[in-house]
Image (spheres, rainbow, N blue to C red):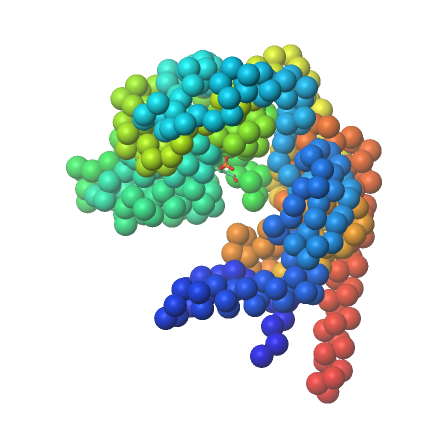
Length: 436
Ligand SMILES: Cc1ncc(COP(=O)(O)O)c(C=O)c1O
């Protein structure tokens, strides 16, 4: 049967019963390549130029498109900052290119200690442990701390690393409606009524990237204290790029030093792979070093990555960081205004990620590729990352995006979406005519 490249999702190939695992992969590959042949596969793009405000990407079907770039994440444009690049080359002179082991053995360069202390300073915490990636930090902090008999209460939209960590740690996993305090309270009281003996961890994020919205961190933390639960907040998308001194949503909400456990990623604002867990307990830091498998059994950050993040963090905390955050905000507001003026619907609040509603998968797939043809490079989020028929562009803005370019891009995006809607409507009426 012919595959409709505008329909279906990765979910269709997740749990198909097969005798050999390759057969499941083959099913997916047929669908993926059908999309590619139809020119509707906007994933797995390759950078031909550095990920700056405009760039060139090669799509998986081999076509190359250049234009204004909202498809990569470098919120304060620090990946191309001269001081950051110099720090990387100087680190090579000091340590070579590799840290040859996990932090539990001998893989940490001593400069990592300084970086850990500086992250603690920014967050007003006492201790920080670095992880090889943000994903490893999110997975590891839950898998490392939670045991089978414990409980995890998790926002339904929490990032994959947190979901996977929770699923690997315990079956006592409760997903709560997005940012829903009342439901969290209900869940905590029910757990405590039946199980006074085991630990509870509550997991949320500083800002959620699919919806660009924020939870009430103060209220979540108070709730956790009331029920002797531990709060974990993932600040991947907000640390560095918003808040006083770049302290993110925790700083915005006046909660510095008061969240039980903070975890984050360097890959959005700090120009490098890497992540961290930060808290006031030395015991938790050292426990995670040996019990979080994604740290214990994985190689530490390289000396280059340590130097890059440290230099980026220095900029984030300096006046220059403040200026970059202001530029980022101006660009974000220009883009959001431009898109709204075109009648497009946006999610959430002004933040480096601008999620924009597109609609059905068929329209969204076509619109994404038309946008690339119209010189705007965007990422598509579709089911199962978001609900069915609620596909959206997840536009990632950076400090070096010029407001005028953002306004121009908004018009081109609107043209692409309208064209895609018209194409899909024409296809549908063509099929209906054929069937009649
Ligand atoms: C909320 C959140 N947490 C964690 C991660 C993982 O970070 P990294 O890319 O550094 O592994 C991401 C990245 O997509 C994220 O969005």
